[in-house]
Image 1 (cartoon, rainbow, N blue to C red):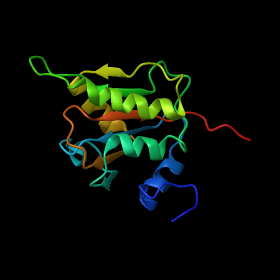
Image 2 (cartoon, rainbow, N blue to C red; image 1 turned 135 degrees about the horizontal axis):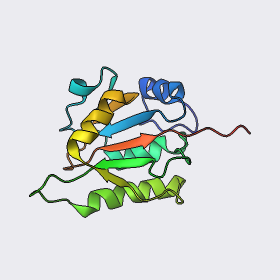
Image 3 (tube, rainbow, N blue to C red; image 1 turned 90 degrees about the vertical axis):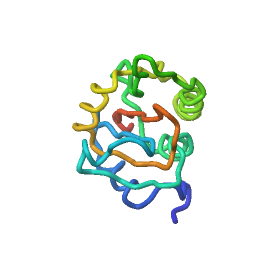
Amino acid sequence: MLKGISPLLSPELLATLCEMGHADEIILADAHFPGATFNANVIRADGLLIPDLLRAILPLLVLDEYDDHPAMMMDVVSGDTLDPSVESAYRAAIDESYPETPEILRIERFAFYERAKNAFAVVMTGDTSKYGNIILKKGVTPVS
């Protein structure tokens, strides 16, 4: 364990966050997402919920301020329903670190899968929320 680092972050996830560069994307995927189908870099975070993981990651990861939508979620498939509390929970977690972040963009399911192919990593969580997947785009870490 490290002081000031959430115990929810595994050494593998910490290394991945550190290795990511500006504009790289990481997906926090719900338990239903076919992560290994779309990306070779899959990190297991079984048992963790995405809002908790967002709260652990975002104090360490700068969101891309040059992108109009550094946070994206999968849009609902036609005829299906969306639980608005899922996005609200993610937004609340994002706002704790980056309240100025633009609204979360919803992208079509297959477009989301295409982004997954090019993502730096996919983190498979234990979250069973329907349409619970979120993409975070890393920004430039300020030098202090």
